Image (cartoon, rainbow, N blue to C red; front, side, top):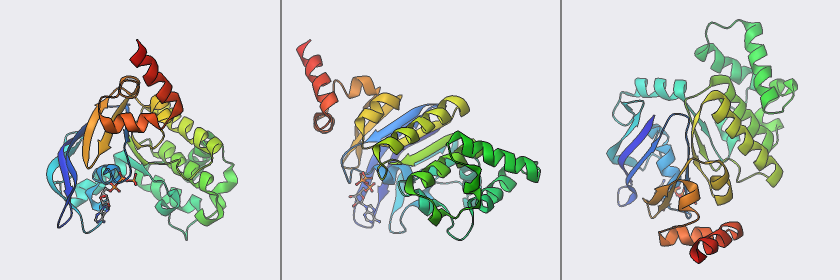
Length: 264
Ligand SMILES: Nc1ncnc2c1ncn2[C@@H]1O[C@H](COP(=O)(O)OP(=O)(O)OP(=O)(O)O)[C@@H](O)[C@H]1O
């Protein structure tokens, strides 16, 4: 579904993402982990290159989504593909909403474009169903983004994904600003979207326990490159690269499973 091929993102003076190749299959959960500054966010933003900071650009490589090159296709086509098939969930979900419109108004605009055949009553039913999935009351529709808590806004962002059923969700540390209980609930919602709607997920995650529990594949990045990739249960319990070993050592439950592997 998504294939990055030798992707390089550069500023005027530096290569920040270097020859990254990564693929996400239909319905697959692919996690990207690595130390701060490794290039994870820039890699995720490159799926829709228009989101990259203006000082940066993709200097070489390709990003193919369902065979279409998102780097070189005309902007109109690129925007069409991304708005129909891809959803972004950021760490600060509030920034993805327009502050001056109620949730109802924002969702109405989305549904009018994406499901033009729906009548007003059906749109409302869909919205209420989506809120129900993320355990929020229908009264949220009347509210503005600033009136919701961080966890509620993140749930509303996932409810949008439920409404629009994207083929791919790109999430950049969606739980890092949330408390443990809310984080666990948000991760389960991602899993529901993956299992019930068949969404593929590309998720940047700092929490290797989450990666081990939820992801089908993991890529470890360091210094702009992918240094190790594979199934989480093998990459994280028998890490080969020093960066992966260091990341795993910082998580007690993984540290002990690495020791067990070593003892066998
Ligand atoms: N607008 C920019 N101009 C110049 N350099 C940038 C810009 N944005 C990011 N960088 C640099 O690119 C590198 C990769 O940044 P990126 O945000 O992708 O890292 P990350 O792995 O997501 O880090 P973190 O886990 O801390 O969010 C970093 O060295 C960062 O300083």
